[in-house]
Image 1 (cartoon, rainbow, N blue to C red):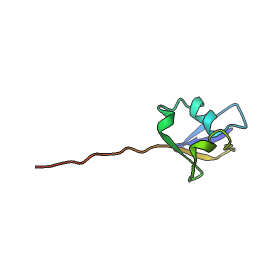
Image 2 (image 1 turned 45 degrees about the vertical axis):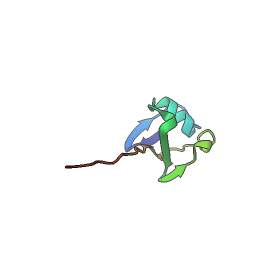
Image 3 (image 1 turned 90 degrees about the vertical axis):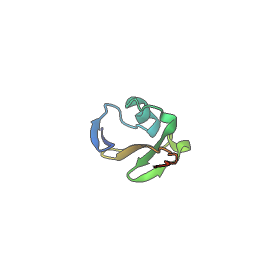
Image 4 (image 1 turned 30 degrees about the vertical axis):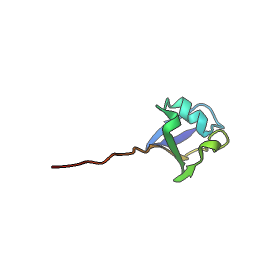
Length: 73
């Protein structure tokens, strides 16, 4: 099965993958901190186990970073 992950085509031997499977198979760092988009729609973390990924789907793993304030001269 081919899936586009963060803009790169990846091929998996398995079919019937869900978002949780992809997080494990792609060795995503800090999976508890990642947000997932499937075909440009955000997926709730509670749905990772039940959201199926299909051939040629686009999946984006996103990390949102908070920032502090910068006090310049």
